[in-house]
Amino acid sequence: MKKVTGWDYMSLALLAFAGIGLEVPLFYWIEPFVYGVQYSEWSVVQHLIHWTVTCILWGTVAYLLIRCAKNKYGFDICERGSKVKAWQWLTIAVVVVLSLVISYIDWNGSKVIKEFYANGWLKFIFQYIYYVFEVVLVTLILVFGQRAFEIWFHKPNIPYGGILIALTWGIGHFFTKGILTGILCMISGLAFGSVYLLVNRDIRKAYGLLFVIFVL
Image 1: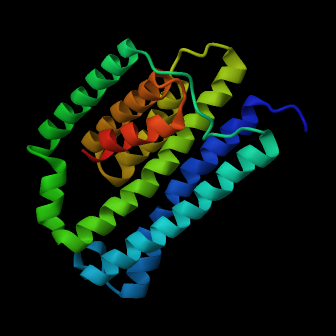
Image 2: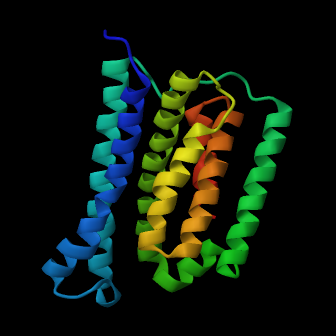
Image 3: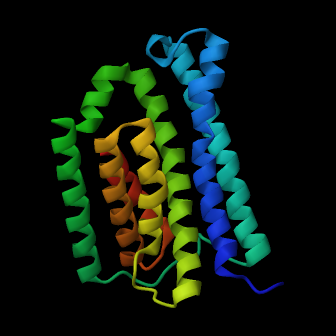
């Protein structure tokens, strides 16, 4: 097995980000062409098709990247981390609470409740399945990015992965969702990176926490 470099992992991180970007041509060009109408006029079925196709694309990308990391670079992202100490859990709780407060202020209420009433139960379920897959790819940007920068700079206590999320996924939202959402996503990215380090790089613990921060 050849020596694994930081760029090998950075390539995986950027491919994860590109995987998220697969939704862009689907959303803005392919589906409007197929349906003959823009997003605001989509039917419930068309929304469900969009989320389903996007999840298939994202799931495929995630599977291939995780498999590549394990088989080609010997990196199992599901490897358990060391035990999380009490002060780490306390810090994580503070990060999560602050994230929820910011979300509540941004949405002027509970994001989950507002989305439920706006979408109805069927669209709500499909949208949150869509979020599950989105967080998977965001997590891969985080994990692979963190690994890359640690190889380059040998400073394991800096949330490089969170910074990379802010500069990719976060900035990407400036163009798709607007300035405010972009800024909030950048902040979320930094929070993601901090939480990942606080759970000692244990993806089993990190993913659930990142999903809570993301959706709530």
